[in-house]
Image (cartoon, rainbow, N blue to C red):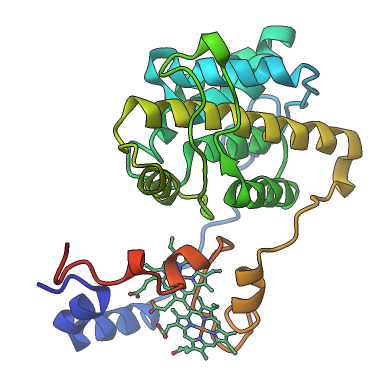
Length: 282
Ligand code: HEC
Ligand code: HEC
């Protein structure tokens, strides 16, 4: 069987295309008077403390926060997103109390395994991005996320060494560079390169240590942002592939048919790993 998207589209034939065109040219429903949502007007509730109303605090002891992130990963198995988020907002809560301690931290368990083991975004990165977004609106968060995600794509993980506090396995672990912010690619590449199973204790330990690594980088970014304010800029430039491919693929360019800023190479380089595995495999 051919499961490819093209084959499925082919099987659905003109119907799908006709249907979506009809929907596009269909009746336009008038929008109601500008809804205020959490801004608290026109009968909507007002977010307590206002939108982006919490003040971020610098975290001085980054090494301590890394250890907290690592412990948070293991704590009841809440995982990477919880660990990173707790190491940032939880550290503020431990030092300053409210409002930081009112956050429903366990919500961050949702990011475990790239969101409920779906292997989408690396939960450690998601936890950090959410912590940034507690304080800053999108325009200010995006450069922070860019810096963190670009660093993650090109770093050999894991770096953190828990020593005797190791909760999965002790000692050094082999590293690999994922070139991807996706849990699936990050874990799978590491497992393939190291021959350590994706469902092994070693892999859990790896992700616990990456939780500490991402926490450290995220806090460095947050501290620098607090210091520099609106003008903060990251140091890392766009990936070579993204720069190259988006000369033509992007808004108002030759082919505006792709979305995103992930390194294009893992998926579009034609490597053996992304070739057809539905036939003559293994
Ligand atoms: C010189 C301009 C240009 C550059 C650079 C470019 N593309 Fe394209 N690409 C196009 C055009 C034009 C199309 C056809 C668009 C259409 O059919 O609507 C296309 C189509 C595609 C397609 C769909 C068709 C196919 O061949 O599968 C993919 C996937 C794609 N590009 C990926 C990439 C990636 C990844 C890079 C960077 C390595 C890249 N492109 C760089 C112009 C470019
Ligand atoms: C995580 C894997 C992944 C990454 C990273 C990725 N792509 Fe894709 N991309 C895909 C997949 C899968 C499709 C759908 C392919 C299909 O239609 O069969 C796709 C579709 C596209 C298409 C539309 C063409 C089509 O055939 O559907 C373009 C153009 C494209 N990607 C360009 C890029 C560029 C440029 C980058 C980097 C900025 C990039 N992609 C990063 C996996 C990826």
